[in-house]
Image (cartoon, rainbow, N blue to C red; front, side, top):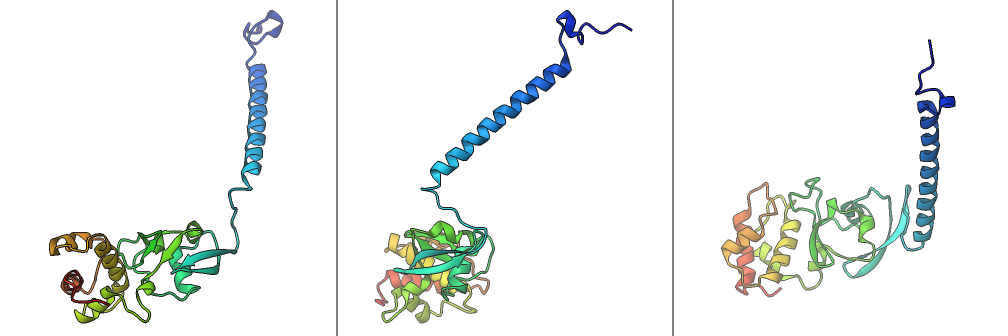
Length: 210
């Protein structure tokens, strides 16, 4: 059987094996070159991008106006660090996706769910928790919750207090309808919504000065 003209290199034909061997070598060379470039770029950027993990890393978080040092793994949420290391237990682990609103905190003055935020991403940012509304002079919102009995089991209460404070800071003259709409991201399994609404209205009307 004669050799195929497509595999006979002596006749100047096309040899698939030689082609694959050559193209494979070229691809490998390109991959090595790209890999070397990626390593070089990573080395150049290592001075500006901090590397963490895989074990515990010491970081500083600014929480309620104070710099606090904590030990974190890359997987740790802000909620875990607040509760387990800083003993700030106001934010609650009610839902894993933040849908309950019970873990609400402020990060750079914006509402966030602490259980959906990695602690490492909060370095250099300002975190505030419900505890910042307490102290010697209690904020008007938690005071109104006390007056209007706006809690039952209490698990949702800190998240509601944070959400109410944030909402009324933005809309100090809100109506009841606006309050209901503004707080629809928080859940109360005990069904104490009516008292929470009354607490909000009490603050709006100026009945509580804190």
